[in-house]
Image 1 (tube, one colour):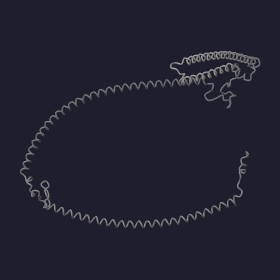
Image 2: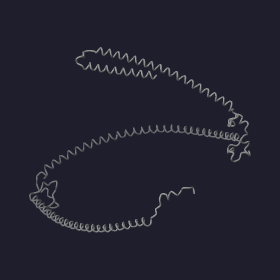
Image 3: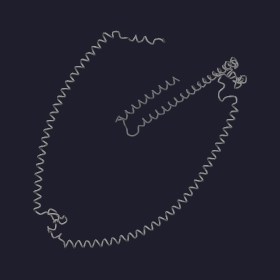
Image 4: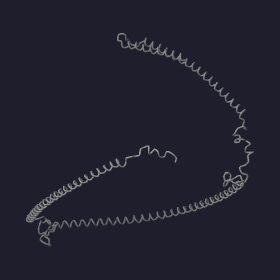
Length: 379
């Protein structure tokens, strides 16, 4: 088999080398402008056909060789499997013969466990409920497992049957009560439906009577509203005519200043007749406004002076606060320096204490060997 593989590999290598050589020749012909011709390269096509036939024939011979080798291997495997089956069969047969000759069932140690006559020949675990062999450790007598179990079970079954009969009767009574209640509910619902229909009919009749009364009332109100509107239009037309006549014959359109004078005082006027101020009144208003402007300017000047005084007071207060803050900072600095000196002194004392403890007190510290001597025994 290995020789066949080597032969096939050699042929395949030769075929690959031949294909490479043909490819090189074809490239030299294609890229050579002197020898390249128009149309199909018949020589190259013939070489490709021959190469394809050779490859098909080679693959066919290789497949035939593989098939033959596979058939041979299958036959050898079948022979080996048959031989293994025969060996296993002979071994099992020898084991069975040895068991039949040297290990009969009655000579085995576990014969008492699966002896078919063991139960018939063996004595019961207990003969009665008061068997002296059944002590506390015998595990043969439990509550509810006495020999009177069939009788007690029969009585329990009869009691259970009576209980089931009572439950079935109770269920039937409950179903009958529910059916009777459903019947009463249906009758009540029918009565309520009839009552609802009667009430709906009465309500419909009342609604119709109410609609008729409302329609009559609305027609009466519409007639009355129309009459009132006609009377109102007539009164408005009469009032407009009277107003026009009063304006034409009254003193409002005569531009008489005396018309606006009030009887309550010379400084009071009738607003609906007043036509405006006179030149003297306008001049008096201007003078009053000038006095108000001067007064406002004087008040603003006084407010500026007062603000300047307050600003000076604020600056003095700020300088005083800065001075107090500076004094407080200096005092905190002094206090901090004192605390730092005190802490340095404490640190020196602690270092001296540690050095004293390490040099004078703790001169013999325990080693790891000292701790390993504990818990080395059960005592």
